[in-house]
Image (tube, rainbow over all chains, first blue to last red; front, side, top):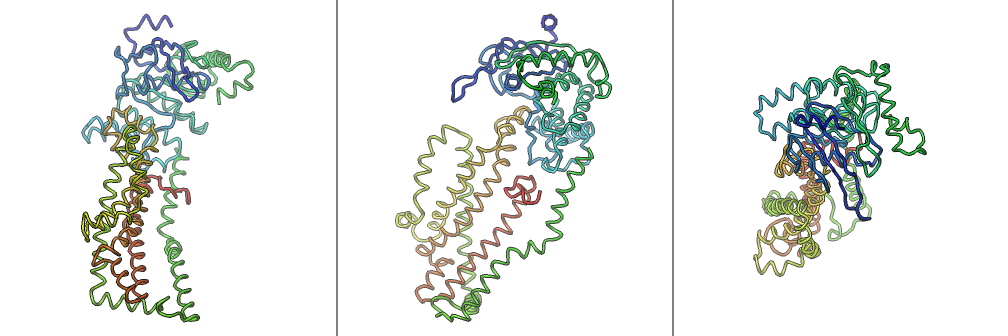
Length: 276
Length: 279
């Protein structure tokens, strides 16, 4: 990615030589192998790669939950030493709190930041509108569908107004139809708020649809294998036109090929599996 | 959107069903008692046992009525309740605090665990002779014995509850900028509450057992003393009546103390252990 390095002054996140080894009962396992990447401010970067390639490890290191065994992670030029409210996370398991209503889950970050009640309610109200949760403010997560819980998780991270948002396969657990809607909502939300987003996924379609740039990771121990720019503003995309846009579909094919190579030639029906 | 609305409503409807058609559910818990009572009446009518082995239902009711009219019953009940509540409150407070400290700190857990296992194995009764020497006969003795029982139950449940709170909830709050105190307050405490409440429920039950044991020896009033005193005069009607009163108070506490707490917390949050039954 020489072109990114040239613009390093605008880089929000810079990862250099990130290697992570974690200890298991069967000895050390190397999760990633010298990952180098940089993400510009306001950029939406997606990362695809085979299961167990270290995607989540990388995201957790960006979030500050784990420390690199080797290499460095910089956010705004400062080494990431732990989790912080400048880097929001939407977890695969959601992590919204079952004992808080939708409203209180979304407002939690502002509560922690001691934002006065009125300002907090205004922000929460706006995000409830943006994510289509109106009417469900006083519900608890267990009373919501999977798709709505997903929206709460996204809204809660957005409400805290971090510069960077890290998303770990947040839509993997919802049904296919809901996922399409959530993806369209996400590109619109990003367009409206201009966040820097790092988004992990298994799905090549999803990766290309959401991204300004798609990164492909090798199998474990993972490193970045390729970076593919996706032209045009993600904010304007919708699935219907995306599916018939030949330029976009060519990128999907290209990414799919790159991912498939990592699955090995013997992997059956790789295309179906990665697009899910 | 629409499927969410559809999914939201059954939960509400099932909640409504619990309240609008409760007659069967209200009567169901009474059935076993009715059956036991019927069996008791029937057995007594057929076998006519001596009053010492099994008194008649009306004799038990009469004996309790007499004690109630004389005001003795209220004295015993109040004395017992005071000891129970003191002991349970102390046991729950120390158990929850201790459970949090141990559940959140691996080194402290390693340090204290052998001690906990050691003392947990020693039943409250064993302490009696020693504790009578230390605390004398009175409220302090009963409170100690109840604490000794409740603490371990609440403690162990709290440790388990604290350790089972999904890590990702904590990370979620940390990523929102929350520090250690915030994660404890907004994640660990509510997250552990199903287990803490389970501990409280068992603790109350075992607290009653410890209380009666303590009162048999170390008290001049209380339901345990009432029952113990009755054995000297072979008053099986008072013994059985005393047991009935203990059981009824225990049920009342469960219904009117614990259940409302559960309904406002773990049930509301969809975390009750029996939530699967209707959803």
